[in-house]
Image 1 (cartoon, helix red, strand yellow):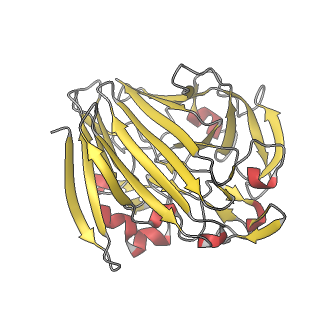
Image 2 (cartoon, helix red, strand yellow):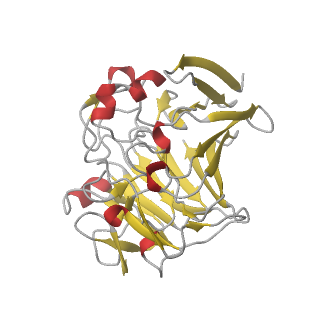
Image 3 (cartoon, helix red, strand yellow):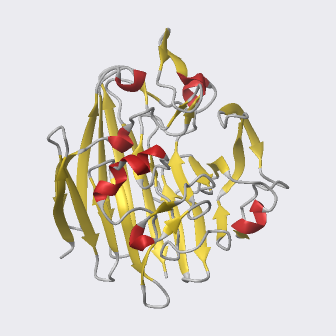
Length: 349
């Protein structure tokens, strides 16, 4: 069946948590849950004709909200919002009024605050099998949540095609002027979760990066990658660059070359062991590359032990902290406007 739905549990607030499996004729399967709008699995058939689950996570949806996991929380496979990445000093000004949002990264805010969209149970609004298996869900973030103004309604639609393309489309509307910058925080390991990502080769279609301060907040400066360790414009082994710097946690400005659907190729990663190539397409201007240095030692799927560099993230988004940097493209959403972005992960084996 292209679409399967399973009830996982009912939480203490009486909300039902579900798990969906989207599948295609090639044997590709994507696991989706309405807890945190999770991508729990993305299973493809690799060059060895083996089923290869290319995202980090857990065997059971319940494990994503366990106290042990939340205590060392690396945001496996979830949507983050209202704003991805960091808001400097956990403050911003909108229409002459200053807002203080929840600080959860020192004095700054990271990924929407202490209980962002990643820890919410989303309302299932639809699912189907045509033209491809899909599921859609909604979260209403109330006015004042984590300090943000306005009631923000956000929808996400996941879809899996016969071409091994897993996409998600995010849409949001507000009743007050607010800040929005959403992304999906999946960790990829193209070798069925085994080993680290240092032997993978990466290419990023961006010739500039956003400068960061010592707390990883963007400063407003945009600098070229040429002749630096951030130059991934041609395929390069990740481990080679990690010999120059301890980690990557950096936003790249993509040199857009849109196809007719508005999607641009943002980045590609390939793994020789599995023969898999991952391509990331998006409508957003930024891809944030994170090498997973701070993944805690934790037991994931199939009793696999994860740790530093077990997976990498390619988070597509708007310019982080743009709400505090006027010359950056805006992340302000006003009543009557619609926020919309689409990201697609394509696997070639």
